[in-house]
Image (tube, rainbow, N blue to C red; front, side, top):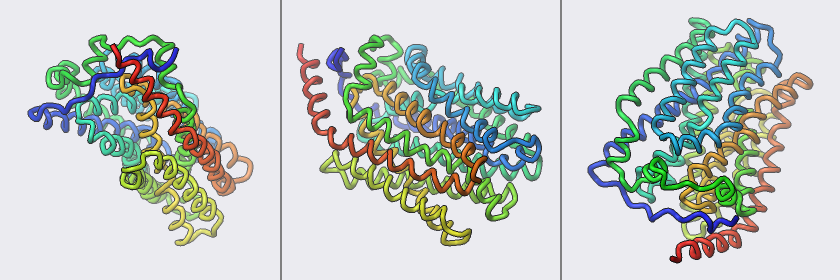
Length: 440
């Protein structure tokens, strides 16, 4: 079944002016829950040194506690996103946030590695589809010309949440114990869930934005078969390359986020709280870089959209060079500067990859397309990154592992280069099929 089997969505219209304020309220609350999402996910990294000391865990076990969340996200994001479109996006977001908050509370009372692993798996279950469903909800209530800005800002929220989780988690852990760190993240999430439940609902969204895609989905306007859906999601070589390239590049981001507190603790002699705060600065650079690289890409590629592939390749190459050199230098200011510069651009591919996925898939299945991108980001990147790094570290040391990890950028570069070579041909084919589908 080809992509023309999926009818294109009617052209989006700007939300009524009277509803613009409410749209920003929805964005703020949805963004707030995204912060909670990543605070709950990344607080673990801040307490790695304390857990290792308390329970005698290996680096592989520590990496698995971090990677299992991304693994669950990768496995479940697609089916749960499809269910959310049918059941109601707002209700699904509330349920997800409640689940990961309660699971984080479970981490606070875990008594051994096994219990912690199960609790972390439930954190991943709750977080699985939040990113894809959240961005689909936001894009459905804002005018199309704001999509790039909103997408970049929303995705960067993951980095900002990671910063808060590690910095606040490390501070609380040193002063009140590592269990209190998990409890604090859980309480923050529960408060936001209550606020979201009071302020936002599917009915309010439908009433204020009758033309929003969310209304179409929730009222059964799109009942695409699984075969048609898969045909739209994987219709071209270039869109598959966008999925793969994005996931591979985030392998490095996931590894660095997970292990930077331990790196600073082991090789710079920083205590857990200061190591977590220092790592949070690097993660913040990653978030700022996602936004800055997205803006730079849009400006560079304003007249020639195909250049987005070239910018993605450039971000991969720059991060590979900077991180490879940085991790091979002796501990000191120069090393930290190079690592910071590398992390600034390492996730810069997120914007170009997301734009390419949106361009290469029908608007009616954009929620599922972003879910597929999230799946690739997690199964290829964020899940294996911490685990593989930990497994290598058990054999050759953490520094040696971090020196190897940047090589993954070369594979990401290859994927983006292949996508670039096929992009114009694939885009012309999709435009032709859309034109055929639009004919009565």
